[in-house]
Amino acid sequence: MAKDKKQPRPKAETPKGFRDYFGQDVTERRDMLDRIAQVYHRNGFDPLETSAVETVEALGKFLPDVDRPNAGVFAWQEEAVPGGGTAGDWLALRYDLTAPLARVAAQYRNDLPSPYRRFAMGPVWRNEKPGPGRFRQFYQCDADTVGSASVAADAEICGMLADALEAVGIDRGDYLVRINNRKVLNGVLEAAQVREDQAEDVLRQIDKFDKVGREGVLALLTTGRLDDSGARIDGVGLSEAQAGPVLAFLEAKGADNAATLDNLSAAVGGSAIGAEGVDELRQIAAMLAAMGVAEDRAVIDPAVVRGLGYYTGPVFEAELTFEILDEKGRKRQFGSVAGGGRYDGLVERFTGQKVPATGVSIGVDRLLAALRAKGLAGAQVAGPVVVTVMDRDRMSDYQSMAADLRAAGIRAEVYLGNPKNFGNQLKYADKRGAPVAIIQGGDEAERGVVQVKDLILGAKIAAEASVEEWKSQPAQTEVARADLVAEVRRIIG
Picture 1 (cartoon, helix red, strand yellow):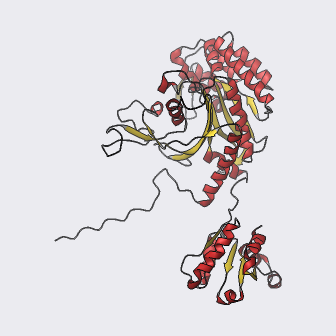
Picture 2 (cartoon, rainbow, N blue to C red):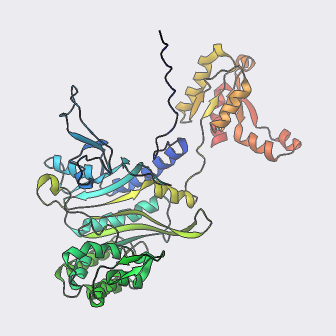
């Protein structure tokens, strides 16, 4: 008989587009999110955790119109399994944290307070092509108010976002929350007499203002232009007169909010919807001022155009204004780390009734990268105190030492590898980032003492000190077993 072929060993590798997070990364992210959560909690927002899996119907707004609805998301069909759903139903990993909120708001609308304030933090998944810095699983941090049509809800979100950035360590002057309104743009389109079939094209060209400037946008709105490669880009087909209100909108930023609002009023002309949008921005500016959020923290800025195709009213983003060095050593501004706005149509998909909502999403990985760039994260997280093992038969004594340290709030562990080679135990402690190692052999046990080795000081002495200094400042001391906790606390305190 032929022998069965040996099965190949699986490759120990992370799937493409995914990554693993180890102690330092996890700790820094958790600490940052904890600080943000405190701000949200202080503003009356409740935490919400939803399932990582949603029905495709709940995520339907993100899916293309294709036969197999898994482009852009990780989706699969239910099979006929005991306790499972209906065979053939489509399920998917959540694409963001907003669609699950809409489903929750609809499903529990009779039980939740209205308005409902919630914040959520967790991973989301997108079935997209990965690239440098672009992963298929990443964290989001959202805060939303569902059920309030008042622009006070938008102002509250903007002020809270500014507070959250400061809570994680971003100084005033290093960030700016910028605010615009889709209704203002609708008024500009109306004033420019843009046809409905041209509106999306106009929005796309407006979004290029930062890249191509006034003349570039003017060309794109009218007859077209040549790109950097010399290729022809067709224009939208507006006349220069029609493009005028659009350019006035893009250039409406004034010396302060009052000047900007006056310029926007001129840009929308006689449009009623445009005037309504300007009035909403005026109210938001007044409320932010009343909340103590000055214009150096949050400002009206018509240059915020991303997401205007999705949002229905106020739209905002948080931008970090300090410079960093890119991979080629060039200075560049860090850029946006959060965005949001009013989206009054999302819950309506489930209920058939208009439910106003507004919210913001912070890019967790991007904000954490900004903190590291500013030196506000990345400090080495201290490892545990390592209790070494000199005698296998006395493991209970070593566990007792670790337990005493833990009871005092000190992170500690007992070495659980092969204790035969003591040097390997110290190498392990070094790899763990341990600040202290505890040593007790049979002789020390009989005398009721322990050796406490200051590993951080020891490393410093070994690298810098002379022999005389090393002798005068030993990194290892002997103390009574009863004084173990006090001595460790003294060293790490």
